[in-house]
Image (cartoon, rainbow, N blue to C red; front, side, top):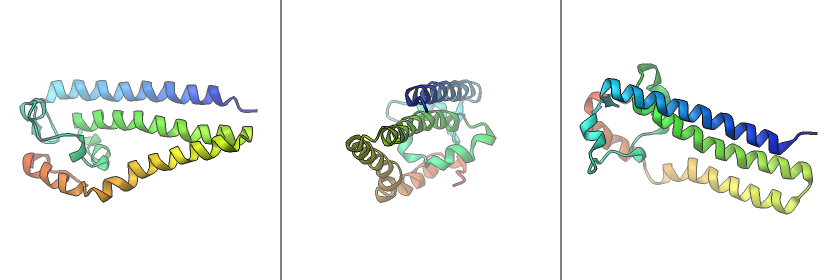
Length: 146
């Protein structure tokens, strides 16, 4: 018999540790390099900066990790936190299936589908590639590889 509460707790604990580690590495690299994605720290840290996380495609975080890009580590840390919550919901569905609690299987499945729509479908509908082009204009030395 699987103790789902233990599995979910362990998953959340390790994902938070991994996420915090990635964010700290990104912050240290940003302090050392003084730039990220080819953008200067002055542009990134300005309160009026047009650059935000919606401009950076998720695969950029993965492709720029070998070049030790600070923002890639920070974004990957944030994505790890989000993935942990999605995994928590998926494990919840499995837990309710094992308990044969069909009402909560339905409700948790709806939550899971909403998360998948928000993560994978809506960004393509909202044409985030336009933001990627804006990022290339603002930080031309970043040479995004997507």
